Image 1 (cartoon, rainbow, N blue to C red):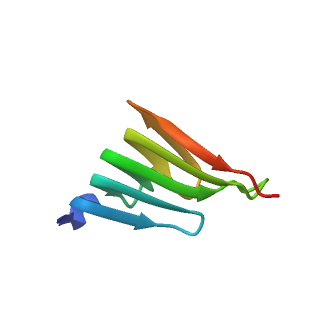
Image 2: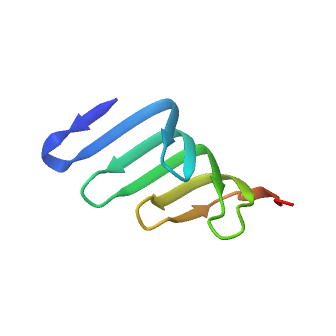
Length: 88
């Protein structure tokens, strides 16, 4: 891993897991910019989260992702597929 305090950047490689209050992110490589609150993931990306309105469980797989945890916004690129488990 690499932490650059001057750039407020954390870079991790391997089987990286990042957890937030509403979601879990996994990827082979993760870059997290603290000041901008942006996470970039690359390689075997997996997102597990709960839809805030419906409370459905959402799992997304992709090649790349960009997430803004505070804004509760994530985008996924490459080979993207996912599963939604409806809450009954």
